[in-house]
Amino acid sequence: MSLANLASQLRQKLNALLSVQPLSAVFPHNQNATAGDQLSRRRRREAKKAIMLWAGLNTAAADDTGRGDSGDSSAAERALRRAHIGLVVQQNHKAPRDPMVLCHGLFGFDVLGPQAVPGLQIHYWRGISEALREIGCKVQVSRVGSVAALKSRAHQLRDFLETRMEGQGINLVAHSMGGLDCRYVITHLPSSKFKVNSLTTVATPHCGSSFMDWCRDSFGVGLLQDYIRKQLDDVVSQHLAATIASSAPAGSSQSAADDIASESNSSSSAAAAASSSSSSAASAPRPQMTHEAAQTLIRTHPLIRALCSPLDSPAFANLTLDYCRTFNELTPDVAEVHYASYAAVAPKMSPLAPLYFSHRIVSEREGPNDGLVALESAKWGEFMGTLECDHWQLIPPRIRQIVRRDTFDPIGFYLNLATQLAEKGY
Image (spheres, helix red, strand yellow):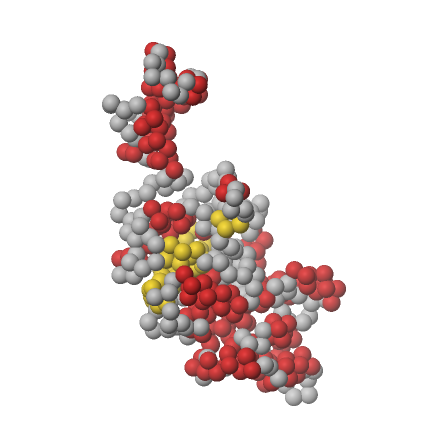
């Protein structure tokens, strides 16, 4: 049968579904169905088969022989609930041995909206966590401060893992900034209450994002000086403060560096404890930060900075190139943990796309990127490959009734990711 004939038959069956009034809805408990009622049921069953065939789920259709309308309807509904646009769930997907913990990125969350009205809730991992559970995965969805400082997000993530995953081995799967949170926990905040087997990052800016540098220089958000003054108990802040102070040339204007150095020297005992707990990381070579680069951070016009300061958040500084360069120097990988990463690249982007402007900026400064994170910045540990999509396509639509017409299938990607973890014995 040709494709044109198949499409024509499917259209006829769908038209029949729309043209026939469902009498069973009017008389749901009528056992003495008329001939017209029986014809209506038969047409509805055939239309449901056509819909499932169109979605690639014809094998899930119920057998009409000896079945009533209610049995066929429930089977069809179960099949359609398992259907994803552009995805036919394969039978060879495997669940990893240990639980998976999904970690969100900047501006992320687990669930938003009232619990009493599930239809109004928005899920960051919408469809992904459900699909993983269907193949047998044990899944937990974490939540940390949406735009909090990296160290604060890391402490919140550790608290979550100690509460929910005590005594278990876990596989961390992180999108965007969530990968930095996980690395901070693994290296600087180890815990005996859980064991991290693997960390898989998806489009994480391990080396920072040049778009955040552009925002810093243009609007005065994400300034490292401000971050260092307010987050002195952060390991990276302490080293950046010392580096800025020591790199200022003699006789030059260095009031900003002097202020930072003096505040760093008078930091609280909590900051000293944090520094001592990461002595192994502190023994690494001190990352270089030129005095000129430090002065660049305060060139924004005072008026623009005053207007944008209410929008500033600590997390913005954590995503600059300077901060991430220092963070990588002070955050070595732990040998017992398997690190893997995926990058995303959007080769072409419509001028109407939300990430078009940022994509152009990162393309000019760092090369191929997903609209926010460059290809090279997303690589860490075992590089698993490049995905052809933008940064936001890695997470399904969060609003009900909205379906993107994308060629990239995020749900299928995370199912394959889980299968790879299972094949590696995690």
